[in-house]
Length: 343
Image (cartoon, rainbow, N blue to C red; front, side, top):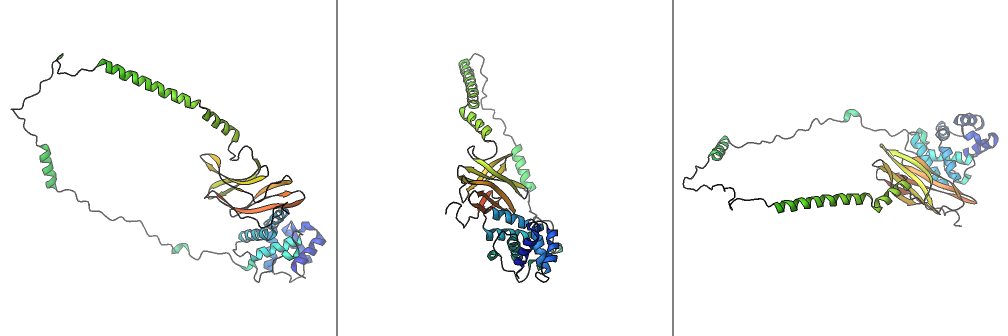
């Protein structure tokens, strides 16, 4: 009997709660499953899938109508990364076996058991050691020979600058104008008065401009928009369905799932000058119908996320994507299945 069938029998005898506790599952596995049905590494993979929460996340996504193959692949990759290996075939196989055993997927979606379990793989390690790094030492700048002018040149310049021409005894000396004589310049009092009046007019005009700008309708409208909109980044007519925060290298962004009537959007907000503002948005692949409920966004790790909702009377909708935090960009992966209600 295949391992996934034996685990399905275990569920029938003990109950579905056996897949919620890794310790209870391991004890039941040793008591009910035939010896030799799984290697030590494979049993470790099955227990790890329960202990890390990968199986529960997979069942939650399948309940929302996510594609089984895509969800198993995504959660299997995360499980492999949590276990410190880049080989994910074994992790995906273990999740598919547990998903069938718990009644989440049919038997034909169980993946083929890999030849070598992932648990036997060792994590990738750097080949170089810290001692191989050679310190190049401080950087030396080439010495530039900046030869100054010769002392002779400085001496010649000093002598030329210090030599003053002798006064010419035959050159007439200009006499200072006597007071009241036409030769002297006098300031026109009318001109001084006109300059003073112009200065006063300019100051008053500038003051009026500042007062008008402070009371302008544009500023009032901007203040009203700021008080109404807040810092959520979504227009006032949109409903916020769910929101999460994601961080990388000290930078935190917010991802919102919003709706406007039947249109739904994924919105990315980044912090700029102390406020979170919208930097990117992308529409969802399916509309938010009147029968939709329980909309969620889930952080899948590794900058990946899942969003979707359930629908009364039809299958749910779910989609995966990626958040480029440094580039402030949303990248949806799209879906292959038709939207709920499309027939």
